[in-house]
Length: 277
Image (cartoon, rainbow, N blue to C red):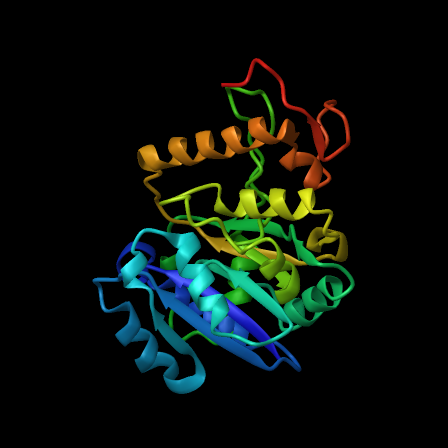
């Protein structure tokens, strides 16, 4: 048994019902008993109704509208509904590549406390014109393999790689329930978009929980691309994360976590510099 947690909001309207394909890719997985909980975080576009029509009792739907906009709190509530030893966190636009992706991922995660870092391939923004709801899921995956690319780009301010080519723990990651409980789950003081997953990875590493990278065992996932409005909350969450590291006195090198090095050392942590604001 594996508990699967997906938080979503207005998936039909804002992401062209990408969740329909996500769940189908989950149901394709070999030799897996899945407890799938969809945390509906205040949808107003009938996402829950569409899910019930498509999947019935195969999935569970939890109303987290009371925490609307707080993705961390939404995920925490859904995770609390399960009892399995491991929890899979998955975004509502992330497709598993092939029927063996999840068994292979769970095998890697079972040797450590948590695992993430699959190679993330991005489908073009018009992906919904390239696949159809009545396509068999294996045909969907075949199409995505042909049209999806690994994003490689540079942050013009820092001069470093933008790490959109790996899955963070909330995009596609597995964690033992014991480790998740030990660090208190996602920090729900982060409101809106950004940094909740980086923060969780940071705190797990601070507590010396061991991890594995899915990229080292050949696991890929497809991201069904869409427009996103980061808004001012993204910068507020970035500042919250920086303040947390400043208080701890250690800077977390996310690129080193993913084993991506840029002539900037190799360790996960360094002393927090004075020139970061």
